Length: 83
Image (cartoon, rainbow, N blue to C red; front, side, top):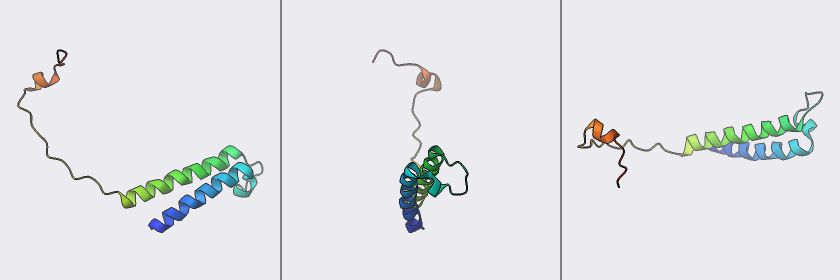
């Protein structure tokens, strides 16, 4: 699956560059293809593929223990202006 997302990154870069030069090649089904739409497709594909890579490779952090302070709630909410 990771190889799929990495190849999708390469494909999205190719779509972005080709969409800037010849948007008709990317949006072949449209009568009047636009460079903005063609490059937007490439950028959205790029962001989606990097999100998939990050979801597969990054591990979530372990939850940290909650430290209870010895101060009351009112003392915690007061501003410490005289540092």
